[in-house]
Figure 1 (cartoon, each protein chain N blue to C red):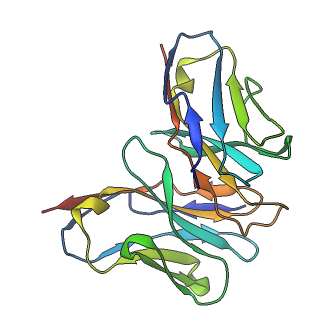
Figure 2: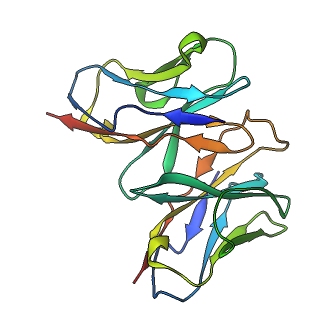
Length: 116
Length: 110
């Protein structure tokens, strides 16, 4: 079974631009979560989507948004990029159905975003 | 509030030596606990998980972890480290979202 895939793997953008990152979950997984990873802040939860609905959201500004399609693929968008948005963005999928915590997440390789 | 603490930012061990990475969690209910490993420039790979039952869980690559409720700990161990184990290790607890520790960087010296 194919793993979680993320595209593109690397991106360089200019401050003020916007960017869209894509994530395809493991087949059969309907839950997709996004994380931002930086050396200073570690792994921070952005949001989770399940059945095309945002189910949980982390503490990020409204410039960070996402969506999920009927095939469970997900995209996240960052508008008005800032230098501090430079990070590795990780997507994870799981079998999670309800809100219980007994689920494991499988991660993609990430998209490395550099904002100049 | 849920949180995970990994007290050791960086650990260096000799190849063939034993390894223990520490993890302490704070969670109000039954914790679901995980260890992940991340190689440079890569995503996170699940090493092992604890949901319930036997408090000593076995994972991939020869790793194991022991859940100790009284100490709120979930330490990762390996009896003999290989050079390929050099990576970043993350402990996590799940609730309505995952909460990750800040990670422990492992260096293996020959």
